[in-house]
Length: 346
Figure (cartoon, rainbow, N blue to C red):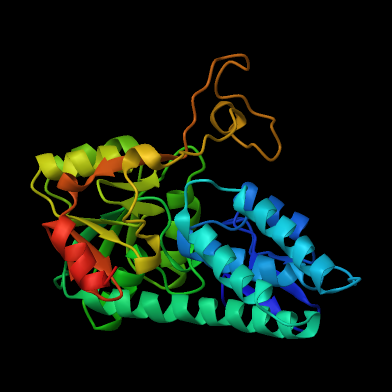
């Protein structure tokens, strides 16, 4: 089952509601952009490649929300909806890529019917491309893994973070598919536990060996020589840093200290190579994520209710800590200033 897809019969976007996992597998139907925008904000759909598809499908969905007076009224409506979607998550560049690509198709269309058809076709194409990129990325990355390796991963980078297959977990899936015996150590990934809730659930569904640890155990298991390499995903890669889930920077420093390869698996659309770290807005999440054990019910306090909270969703890891990038076009090694442009042709 895909993480996100278009339901032609109901003219809606359907997606796995990741806030419900691992308790239950529930599919959310988004019949308007407000519902989709809310799903993105509350992380019912998340992960840079999945957000790329969500942005693309969301712009297509805007085409079907109501009847329009004329083509200009239609285009104005879609542009407003596109801005609404773009405002949901400021850090992940893939979201903007998906939105802009479908919006461009719509604005160049001659009439409403043509725009609807072309928009949906382009969104479906973006979703298919994501799967193909992930499979290619997995094939390249699997070469870095040896039979018997133990891989530490952070956050969720599997099919739930993409349309299907995954980025960092996609590399592991590809290695396992080749017959290699790979074990995974998954960090819980506070504060929303995407590692424990989502990564462990995914890997257990696929019968891939996984052990859960707290985030604070990463250095300990590295020092005990229990880890052969680290593979993480990315939400945006600029020319001097990798933006990924908060805590990634600490993992990268620990890996460097212990002589463990630190790989970043990401599609070419995650590279925003004309930007620097200082150009990127880091999203800050709500204080409730840190002070409640269950933010959906808000029943159990795990911190004083009036405590001051700082809750950035992402951090930036300088490229000197990255051993290699795993992309659909191949493995990219230092010097990145030369090799990223050469391999990705950007």
